Length: 287
Length: 306
Image (cartoon, rainbow over all chains, first blue to last red; front, side, top):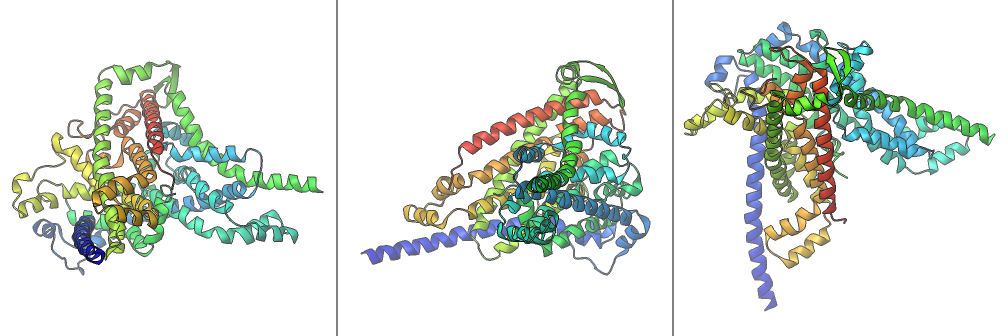
């Protein structure tokens, strides 16, 4: 009796499982189509002339036809914007990781009075929406005479990136074992040498996570350049894109190739490093 | 000798901690504290004039036309928040549940659902603006192609559909984020609990509502709170897709646009008022802080420690 019963339930279970998994699979496939279609249409359209886009928006283009890209390369400031984005993002990341590791190392490795208060001070920055402080920030940048200067962006991004970086890295640095450090101290190594030669090589995984979490929002940011930067030759990519889209409103082929070119760097890096990207960008929300 | 070494270490710690602390103090804490002070003064351009007490707050809340603008923008933010709770977080939960089954292709689906998240909001905004174009946009072309031509309309050009269309673009952009946060929460549910449930019930519904949902409560707390803060800070998508004035007719105006417009002026009006702008910023800030605090404590209370 019991064998028959098991068998019956098994069969029912199998059927239910197939039905349910089939439905879930359909949901996933439908969603993936919806997620990828806009990106595929964008890339396809980048290789079409405007009349071709209007006539057959979904057709597969002739990928050797790169007139749109040539136009962007030769007629617009696109390369300048791209370069500016690299400079601003690169400088911000160097500052964030350097300063963030310094603070996290001090907080995670040494016990001193006020350390928990300082950690709290950093963490307070995690939750505050800095956009709302844009007026005083604007005045501050004016007083520092760095309005219309990329330093204003680099400084704001660095300050915004530090709370998450200190948060992620302090926890990581705290969890490292003491033995290596103690042994080096016995041998008379200086504190700076211990940090540089012994501990820093160990914190690289946390630096990757903290780096990815910050690099994406900084690379993509539009709000702070909008307020701080006026000069066209200083604009970053998202901000430059608004200038560019305004100039070519009727030339859809060029518009789509501009969008494709702007999206390409981050999409390519994401495809290669998707695991690290997902871990990094959700690390603040996943315990 | 030990004394000397301690001072050396004290100096070392100070050298490590002061530069990062200075950045946060100067570019985060100081501006936020100042924003509160700015709101109590009258401003002319970039010049601070007299102390006016609560007058700026009174103006944005009770004096026309500011009053109507404030109410309209706030109302739209509330719509955005609730719509995204369904479209972004609700759908995210379903997708996470589907991904959690580790069906064939799950890895690919996971990469695909997160791909739009890494794109710049500006790219997403322009892309969807082109897609929603009344004549040549793929949305209307698709509708006509599948025999639903009567549904084709100027999505961004009319008050009834503009905000909804922008919300859909936002949901496409960000649905991968709650999906993967929920998925991480589900993957932490211990196998023994799931086995025990399988013995008790066959019903998928019971399993989701009684086991999975309560156990991913920590993930829910975080994505709900982040969505709330994000919805009331919303700026880039409506700025590109609806314009700085929240066209058409203020139907896409939200607090972020309204605040920016008040503080820095817009092309047509050209006036800027730092006093009123700061008052708005302070009000939005306090509102977000209070509600996010309430949401977090309420939701935390129902979290179960595993």
